[in-house]
Amino acid sequence: MNIYFKKDSIKARLILIIAICVAGMLILAANQIHDTNKLIELNTQSKALLNLNAQLLQLRRHEKDFLLRSDVKYQDLFQQQADDFETQAAALEYFFTSKKNEQAMFNHVKQSFSDYRQKFIALTEVQKQIGLDESSGYQGQFRKATHKLEQHLQQNSYLKFHLALLQLRRNEKDFMLRHQVKYFEQYQQEYRELRQNIANTGNIQLLSLLDSYQGGFAQLVAAQQKLGLTHTQGLQGAFREQAHNTENALIVLDKSLVMILEDTQQKVKRNSLLIMLGTSAVLLTLLIRSFITLQKAFSTFVMFFYRCKREYQHIDERKQGFSEFKYLATIANEMIDARQEMELELKKAQLKIAELKQQQQAPSET
Image 1 (cartoon, rainbow, N blue to C red):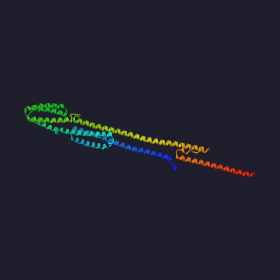
Image 2 (image 1 turned 90 degrees about the vertical axis):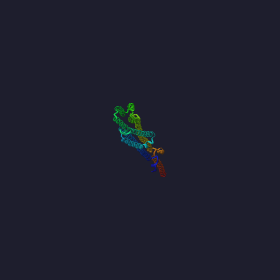
Image 3 (image 1 turned 60 degrees about the vertical axis):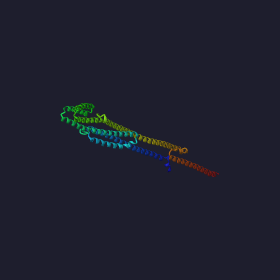
Image 4 (image 1 turned 180 degrees about the horizontal axis):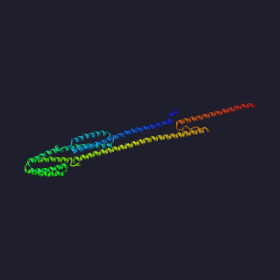
């Protein structure tokens, strides 16, 4: 029965078809598992990037709270949030090392955020120099000098000078409220006039107090200009621009990752479709060839048995597709040969009998 294990047997063909089906399903399953894991990883990184965006928004909230309220606690909250941002960014870095374009984008995000953080630190240092409240920094020094000057003027009844000082303080308050240079220029002009008038009196102590007051205010103005008279100037403008650069860099990186995710999804669909089509094409080819071979074999045997009624004709074993049919053709040919031999022997026996009868009839006639 070794015939059933030959390569061209029906059993071998069926085993091949089953093997192709199993192999196709295994390849499809392995591909699905691999691509699913890849999609899960991409989704995880996409969520992590969204979390970084959320953290950056929280950082901007602390930044604005500090600028509005000048409270150190918001600076501390900013630094804590920035540390968390950098920790989560470091956890993402390994993912982008294998992607050249995305790695460059990620490095740009890191550098932009580092510059953003440094600019915020520089901004807070200048704000601390100016003063977080009216009694600290340049504001505190300037305020003390102002109170000393006012007290001296009141004690000595310098009404004219006191009125001029009130005008100076009006320009001072306008500058601090509106942050416009014109008020400082008016302040400087009135200060020079007042100083000249006090110098004419020869009151050196009053002149020293006025200079101390003006010097404190000039320091505050210089620091405020360095900080920025508007949100687009000075450190505020540079810091704001850097914050926008960091936000844009994150958005670009997130869009790039979304495109990678979409491409991977399309690739998963394409690979799955190719595997199914390839497996189906191979199976369909095998089934069609098997069907044609079976049909030819059955047609051959039908014709063989039909002709066996009238003539002895052998089947060509080489033309049978499957080994089982070749084996059947061999047996059928042996049956024909055996039948021919039997018929020949039968004819010989009949001839011999006929000869014996003739020999028996001949003596009797004599």
